[in-house]
Amino acid sequence: MKNPILSKHFQEIKPSVIRIAQILFSKRKEKIDAINTAIGNVSLPMHPAMQRRMFNLDTSDSPFKTGVVGYTATIGMEETNKAFLNIIASSGFSTKGLFTQITDGGSQAMELVILGTCGRAGTNEKPLLLIDPAYTNYLAMAKRLGRKTVSVMRVLNHRGEFALPDLEKIEKIIVKNKPGAIVVIPYDNPTGQHFDNKTMIKLAKLCVKYNLWMISDEAYRELCYDEKEIISIWKLSEKDVQGIKGRRISIESSSKVWNACGLRIGAIVTDNKLFHEQCVAENTANLCSNAIGQYIFGSLANESHSALQKWYRKQRKYYKAMLTSLTNELEKKVPGIIVSIPAAAIYSVIDVRNVTKPGFDAAEFVKFCATKGKVKIGKHNYTLLVAPMNGFYSVRPGEKNPGKTQMRIAYVEKPERIQLVPELFAKLLKEYEKANSNSGY
Image 1 (cartoon, rainbow, N blue to C red):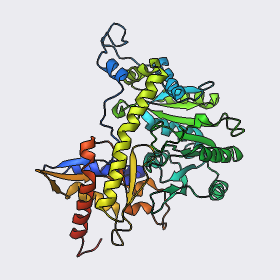
Image 2 (tube, rainbow, N blue to C red; image 1 turned 90 degrees about the horizontal axis):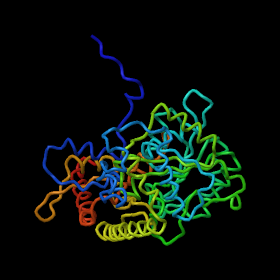
Image 3 (cartoon, one colour; image 1 turned 30 degrees about the vertical axis):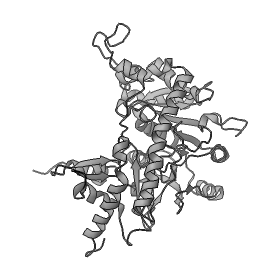
Image 4 (cartoon, rainbow, N blue to C red; image 1 turned 45 degrees about the horizontal axis):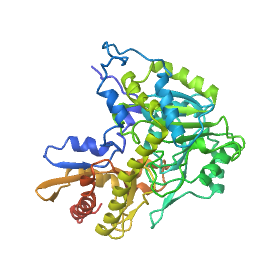
């Protein structure tokens, strides 16, 4: 009897580069402690207001006191939508004329936004323009929908800086490929770059000139460490960019700033009423997002702006200490290594192009660390899980992928464990090169 045939998409799909190390390590039989910096799974407690609701779902004012968990409206609970608007307003931006809907985390928001701005396969679709290296899930979601992506490449220089190419080059890519939208991540995942307002304005003007949607992924808004101003698509005005109104979309998330990755609550915010209405219509097939998660996150609708600002300062202080320390220690432990400047978000890109032999493949190194690598520190054996950067670039066949010598580190383990990363990385790299000294890479 013949087996049923998988679709071509399923035959070709591979696990995300941010999950592959964890998947490989889970199959390892040897008992060993893994410092997992491959995925941004924050290990901090949620905001206190959110915790109070989570631990008190049976109180008299809880919608779940009777044990019934029903569907919410597809658009989401009113309070949860207000929470996202309150958060935007707490950063000093006007929320007048903004429309919101709740999604299953930022990931579902990405999928809906790609559908709404670029279309689906078989229609009069347009490609999605990304700024490489770009968060890998945009590539994954576009592939799932049969959407093409085009990209403009940032290059990591020896000082740890990712710089955008000239606007003329971006404009040429737009003219040639006619994308439907551009994705900007002002507090960038994976690079840790912090876009300034001048850059946002320049990109917004291109969106107006070529009639593109401007999508701003703001999952890490307020997590900036370079003392620059707080940036957002909602800072852009008609005075800055005439014609920007009605083409702005932001993707919001409970995961990072609010330490609630597993809550899976996100939002799409836009100033375009028609886009909003049709986006909600598209999502009715999914019924609604997690009702309990919405209720927990909805608690932030009642927090004052001063209280939220206090929370942001606490978050920034926590991450800045780890970012600065790890960058300095990595440069000491591995002379010649390039580490991206930690200006925003909770990630660093490390590049070993100057300290390894030609042919080094970060994906193979990640596999080695997950399946074989071992370093003894004190009385314990450790390995390190990181994400290979090859999956963050949308290069075409025949093009060189800068991610081959690059890896992303997420600052999600507790500080005392993050302190082990430089030593672990240095020793595992030597171990890997020794293991491949005879056969080569």
